[in-house]
Amino acid sequence: MSEQPGLFEQPGAPKRRKPAPGEVRPSWESPLLQAPMLPADIRLGTSSWFFPGWRGLVYEGLHPQTALSKNGLAAYAQIPLLRTVSLDRTFYAPITAVEYARYAGQVPDHFSFVVKAPALVCDAVVRDEQGRGKVPNPHFLDPAIAAREFVVPCLEGLGAKAGPLVFQVSPLPRGLVGEATTVVERLAAFFAALPQELGRNRPRYALELRNADLLTPRLMRVLREQGVRYCVGLHDRMPEVERQERALAALDGGTPGDLVVRWNLHRGFLYQAAKQRYEPFDRLIDEDHETRQVLARMAVRAFEAGRKVWITANNKAEGSAPLSLLKLAEEIAAALAAP
Image (cartoon, rainbow, N blue to C red; front, side, top):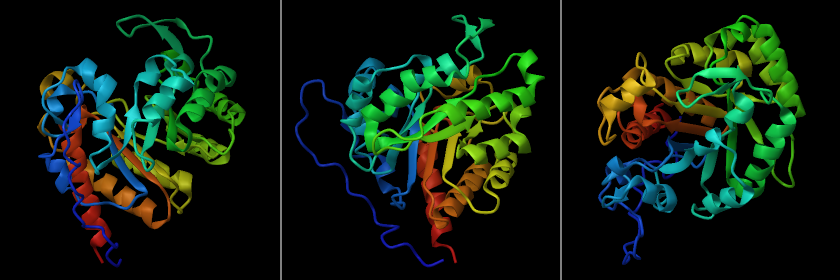
């Protein structure tokens, strides 16, 4: 393949100016500014943005998490490498169109959000503060509630900056896991009933799993029929990335579609153990070269087919999400430039 025009141009540092009181600014000394410039349709980003340990990587100076949560997104979006972010707070509770619009107003036009649907419709059980399922959730896979509480306000607030709307189905109770066929049928009915258009915006729906038993050819057929993307979710509950790559190939039937990846967790770790090992998330500790190579290959394949790519990385993947993306961008750029 011929070299992409401008592929290896070094993006300029954000413009220097005097900060306003309490302002969060991007780091002008960040190694992320040395990342290769990828094609516009390959978007890399992190899972959330408000980590004080990213001082010098994303942010200039030290800021408390509350300040970064409120004011850090605009600084984050000035780093050329970071052209998407996973909006995770929406999983825990729905937010309004006004709140979505506030996020959209902090980022440039080329930016695109990956947005998680609320557990209100994605979790089969109602959980306590420790995450234990207590009773069945009567709103599980309810398309009317999903549309009203999530899809409509999300598209109204984000507009063209809305990327994939990811329905991450939380770990199912044992009774439902044993009824995988029924769950797949419910997913088919659910996605068929969701809005397919809102004004000039057409939602991009994606499904992420936390039960490997549901990753079946039947599910892939259902997603293909409904025009829903399978979100490659790298997590301790799911198979290795190579198996999910094969499942995605079965969904696409040889012609790649849009690629949505959430690189959540290092293989073999539980979430809390990874968090304790990797905090404050300022360096790579357990590099996962194999996963990175597979993700780069998948991104290039989708891009060469004229599709869009969203890959978000969590700090728990290798230790520091921004540095994981820097390495991944270099891998993708090398693959794009290869014969």
